[in-house]
Image (cartoon, rainbow, N blue to C red; front, side, top):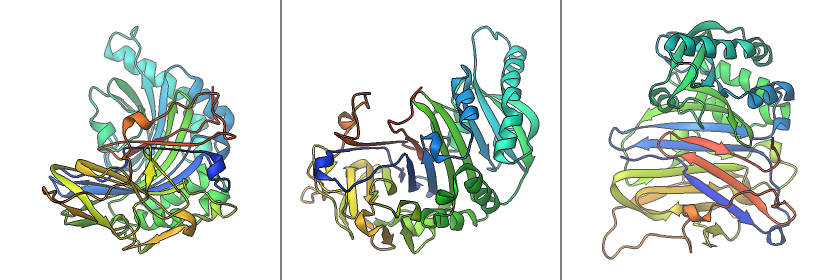
Length: 387
């Protein structure tokens, strides 16, 4: 089976070699996922941040949610059947960890309900909605987590969802509303990736996913819009075609400087059959030690470029844009005489570095992006937000 998604990219660049490069905790990305065995996949636009200053959600609410020992995350979605039993409604979900002293299902439900009710009024006020209690759903497996492409651990096995609902609405309406509610004007009206998300949201089968994942390093907040699609894999893939756009532009939020790692197009290709990257229409960025030499250039960087799982990230470079055709990847079935086009050293999991407190932006630019293969989930943590 084939999937397009990002798995893991860690880029660490000395500032001495990239003095004009800026970093932010807010990142925008375009992701495409494809399952070759069923010829289906998803195309997603993601807006995410790990810094409370990048959102309009009050610091007090974010802190109280993160500091609560049982709250794992908050989710809003208009996806069909967000949990079993919900039909033709959109869901606001507070996900809660189970505890050992709740020994039967009634205790589990009552305990989770008490946690959710503690926050629902404040969540309604800050999100501009009026969700009412619907039900409690205990996750005995990861089916909903996978079905909704929920990032992080907010809806995993053995968690409890306290479900509140509001009337269903079109995805594009929710997308515009949540972008303006969650993010400040500079991000919400930044065009570029925001406009691409709005186009994606106009498709009838698209859905919105808002997530606040209470990670160890602080809340990770995301607004994601996803469109499922059906398409057989051929000998090439162009992610912009699956997004339904002719070109993708860096948002105006980044107009005050060069932020090459803040606007990304990302793919992974997984298959029962081994493939290689035969070539691409844009440059394949050279690198050493699993890192691109020059992140200001436009092109692809692949952490895995051959086998049953291929993963890569397209950097917009100083140009700040890419068009259909420029992001095309040509695939081939490997033969004994054919070599994949590769950077000097592919990424591997050993290139990931822990962001210790003694790492500062005076010595390094550190950007780590983690995407769970198979569900197109993204987790992005920057150093600036700590308990």
